[in-house]
Image (tube, rainbow, N blue to C red; front, side, top):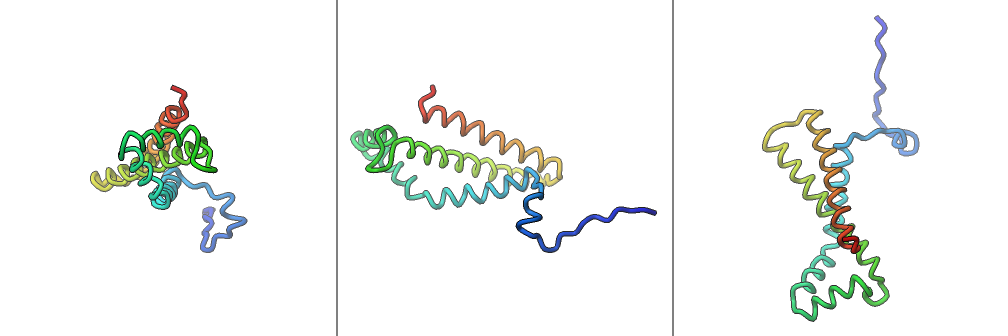
Length: 141
């Protein structure tokens, strides 16, 4: 009887173990869900300003549009577009990952295969939608 014992990691060494640890797709989705939520929370004042400028009046809407081209003060327009692209990704990923969790809660489907496949769908769909909206944001179509 020659059985191979599996290694047990009770204390992970940051420099040795974390560089070789392979996180599954569901783990990436979970970590990115938390990062996107934090990003949305921290940039909430910017989102409120975007919303306010775009809806207050025609003049403020023109100021909002010009900010993406000419910038605001010392902040160039391309940086505002880049931050907006980050917000777009954060919203899309957070929404899709949240919908994934709700779907798993409602259907009680918590198998490893279903979790893996739904995580890949969330990652792929959030990146594709971000690329499409980013192309529109940067004026490619």
